[in-house]
Length: 379
Image (tube, rainbow, N blue to C red; front, top):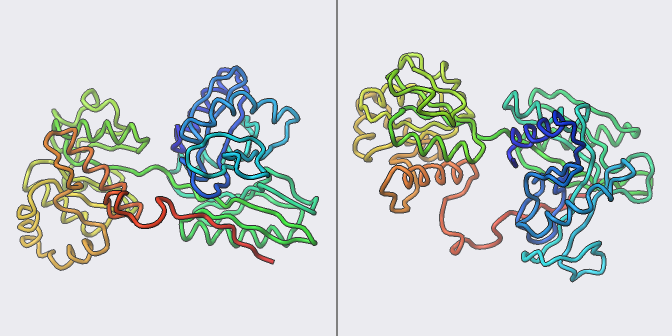
């Protein structure tokens, strides 16, 4: 449930059952940890829970204590550590040599954080939130207070300190523009306020052109990852909802107008696997104009290059290859030999591409697996 739609659905389901809910969110990580800031876990009053905030080390402890720690109704931030530091509230064998700061807060249908997450899930547009995670020597803000900003620049929320509010909104807008979450410490009236500025993006929107047998595991695995999945094909006997029950949309596509019909935008990721040379070529020509964030073409390299030559797009294709947009043959080189393995190779490449990674082995990666999120300070 750690995708935004999954979090929203889990909360809605719990509230519909009349359950009270505590939301646990990772807001700060020191050194290494299995999950990064922004990971969420839902805890109901009866002990039911969903999601993860660690590799399994902390979840049972949070289930036991989340309601006790928030019994006063106010949000709290707890710090879990390996025990090496004297400041640790609780010591655990996290296995990652790091400390995790987790915000615990009650959520109901009127909670601003639920409204914010719902906007991202339903509109499938990015947004950003600044939440207070610590304060010292200042009483004008409280842990858990939030400011929000949407993709169109709409600002929601307020702080009692107007100057601080202006500064945080400016930094929040910058974070949304760059697409990177960050942490800030602001010095105010002789005190200090720490914020977690979180940028939330909706799950990838995958559009699969081609509804053959090999599209089924690709759609299923993408669904299991929490991605929004559209399957489109010009053949009505292939593009059927009963063949793709895991897909959000199954469309019988008019090849001359397929992209708008399938909602393809510059933020989409697209895989061409119709197994029809003519269909792939017509769709590829349209995609090169729209330029979604990822285009993957199934089939041999020579087949795609022949298509590009025939539509006079070899130069444009080279530009998009260099930009990390166009990929052919699609997928990572993992020795895939059946539809399930091919689907794994394709999804792994898409994830690497949209994350700015090359898809290589972690064994050969220099430095940390995750880029550290340092605390920035501003007077």
